[in-house]
Length: 498
Image (cartoon, rainbow, N blue to C red; front, top):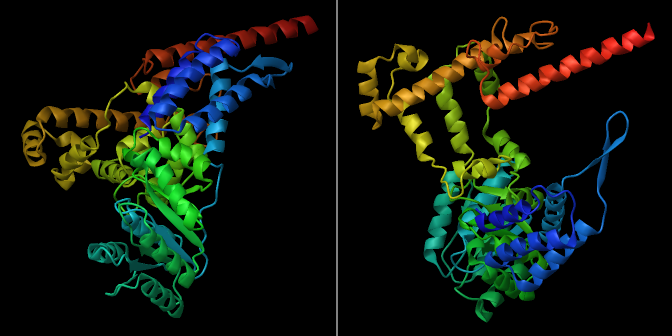
């Protein structure tokens, strides 16, 4: 998702490696990379020029400095960080800043409009699910009279999410919408989501039908559904609808399939209409309120922790997670618990989207690498091929059992062996962290008073003596040197006072 933009901004930041100050020359070189990626992403040239001018002004218009430390020493911000912050701020501003999603109180009407094939019907169901999760009682209205399959599609989706659908045969879309609104008010339901018809192109007949529906139902929000993969054409479509209808926002669909990202980036600047929701998958749960700051952060390769935590909170069972964590620290964590965690991850959507929201993941993974959800399904198949006793005590799995599990899951004994080895190592390490004398038991408030030297690197590693890796070993040595210097300074001060 948005790989073209991310690659361009990443290349731009490389220009500041080893650079201590921002100058006209190095900013111009970096912005050249950004310009190329924006144009490749199908952003209009005028918008690109305006964006680059604003970033340049942010970079060179202010002297940035932070103060910190006991002596109020001045510390300079890294040039690359200053440049990234300027890009981030301008990206957020370009996409419209933070907006609250439509509340749609009571039996308010949400009218979805757009061209045929942009995903209006699926988006209507996703919106209904979104409002139902908020404790509302939405009603879907099938008002696409030109495409009979749309009514059946909406009915099936409504059954899947447990939301009623108002539908009947007929050619008068405005009358059907008015009847659906009346039925919602009588049943005290809302919001009312209208799935209107579309065409392959904007025409007067379509716009006249939509204007009549709007006049009969007086929608609180008219949302244009746009396909992100249309690129610059999505901007032209939005401009065409905005000329005839009072658009309150956009639903940007198929953002996960768009490697360029030009539409998401430029549509607010070109039309003045903000993006309200985005969809990133086919499932009815794959809709989320649009957060410009989250998308800007992902474009710059810095992940989106806020978005990640929001998704996690929607799918996790807090009590179950606490119980699993307690069993893990006691060494009682079994493969059934592991399977439960895998399924929680799967509920959060495609693994590649999940990884993209982790800060720094883009820098750690080689360019072009594919994060495959099949690996999670393979692990799930191996666990489901085990007996309840094997899941509880995987150490009893011998060669005979291993061969049986491999046949049942369609995997190789080597794959199974690697999975069991990783699981065993994780469980052993967490058990040592949590049990008597381990790291967590020595932290204040978690089982003991921690005195000097209480944190044992061997216990942290779970390896009986060696640090977990070279980076950790260096960090531990550096910490020890800092503590030694601190003690030496204390002794000197005491000596002077005497």
